[in-house]
Length: 178
Image 1 (cartoon, rainbow, N blue to C red):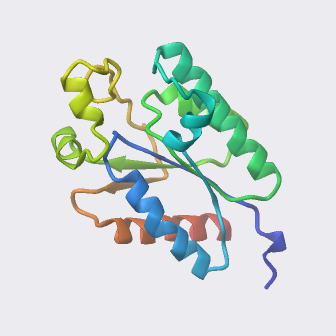
Image 2 (cartoon, rainbow, N blue to C red):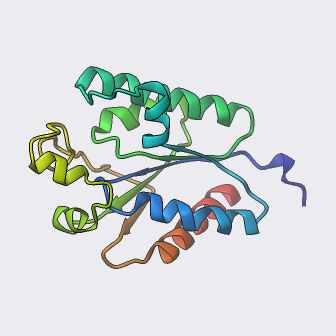
């Protein structure tokens, strides 16, 4: 069966910093490849280095950043490219805007208690927040608004990244067969 008739997918993994989003994406890509699927990953830190190299994380900058991220995803999707957005997107409004451009957006809520995220914090995001070097850390100074009705919830205190990636593959396959 040819893949030309299958509509591409867009998937947004949202969750607190250090909740496990990037680890899941790293396991997801080879699983998709084994199914002859590729995907472009829009990872917030990588995109931010281009769009806002001197990021201030102000409310206005975040709004612009997430609008740009959503626009990029929508353009890739329009050209038949599967897209995975790996970004905290702490406000629901950011993800709701994406849905205005991508009606079939799959929203995956990567859930993990704040104290566990803080223990896992390889990038030092929470440390900088606690030391006063950053004043906009989601979960610390900024609230994180979890999705109200995500397509999939992954609790990364119970699921290893590999098992979480398997659940995403099942979601994508189920969505494509409907």
